Amino acid sequence: MTPIVLNLNPFVELSDEQFYQLCQNHRDLKFERTARGELVIVTPVGGEGGSWEADLIGDLVYWNRQTQLGKVFSSSTCFKLPNGADRSPDAAWVILERWNQLTPEQQKRFPPICPDFVIELRSESDALEPLQQKMREYISSGVRLGWLINSQKRQVEIYRVNQDKQILENPKQLTGENVLPGFVFNLSILWG
Figure 1 (cartoon, one colour):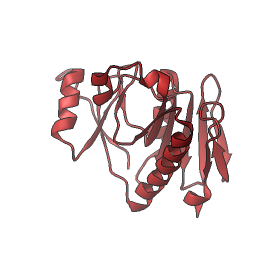
Figure 2 (cartoon, rainbow, N blue to C red):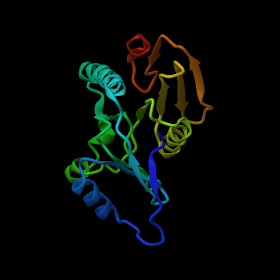
Figure 3 (spheres, rainbow, N blue to C red):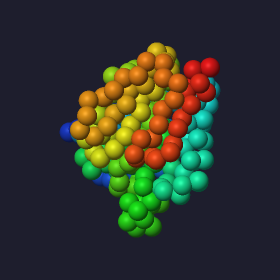
């Protein structure tokens, strides 16, 4: 299912504070906002997709606890990107030095920072093109490495700065390359 996108312009233009309060007042819904100010209502994933997301985050957290190089974030975190969009990747990681440059208040709300690494996991309810657009937006906003995992096709699209996306068919594992040194994710967890 494609997320519901509401174009509120020119009737309403939400400030950052209004968008934050909207999200706080409706915690049972997951909102994103495009750079054009469109409100995106993100649909929840099913049990299988949620379990896969947890596996990805768990491995990322375990690696990060060993290296202590950054901060790991779940899909509940909304990042304020440099282009004005507010996005929530399924998993994200920010290098510690960059995270520590934010004020405590910025860290508590929607951090005005683009993650260094993101994962989007395509669930059965997700259309592929909106996720690919999101990945391109992440890269143009400063993400250094991104994985779009398409479990239906057993395919992974890898996004890197200043490079064409790379498509891997039925890969056995993914590495964090120079962004997440030593991080390896075994895809047999997802592929079964």
